[in-house]
Image (cartoon, rainbow, N blue to C red):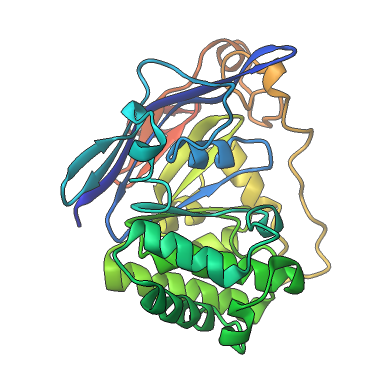
Length: 332
């Protein structure tokens, strides 16, 4: 596989009425062509903000620190995303080389334009298709994501579709341009189990067919286990663990990752009580010093956890964890 995406030292802050807050703090990861990376964590951990940064879609009050670098590697050469300023320059990544499936489909479709017209318009902007061919591709993609009578749905408006059908239409729209990188923000949340499996299979097919990379954001570790090649665990804007999905799920090494997995219901004992992580994720305005998880961590070691930010240590060749419980190359 060849390198598709490099994210280095991504730090993103927002100006608010209460002051400047840090939403993403020194996040780095890579993605290969044809690879699926799961990005998991609780609501408020910074997953969606991180994903939007890849397309520079965050609000105008967002500030990126100077050492933030995001590079997309295309056939024509690398694209320095942070250097893109004008709408014309950003068109290369927004809907072209990068597509995004947003979390809320009703807010993402124009209510006064049919689903089909929106799909055709984006294909004509980002490809050399004529209107007839763009319509054919759009209907075909609507059918591939499990929308029955796709030619009829093509002519309808977003408010005429159910929530699950709108979600599938958005997935079809994002995939129709065959992007090099697909950002999927909770893409299966509104779907029933059958359609969810169908959409996941479609994504896998497109990864295999076109060598597309996917950043898959979800709360569902079960979906990540069957979909992703690797996983990054995020908490309060920082990555705390990352690695091959089997390594991280079978051998979770950060207390937060262990807590997420322990909170899942057991299929072997449905009467077993759930084990939630105690407390709530802090506000970005009240980021704790040291390890950001120290206020909720059952393995808190005191001063070092509340004072020093842990750096990544190697658990194995394909597994890293940022925790003071670990020394470089040595689990304690």
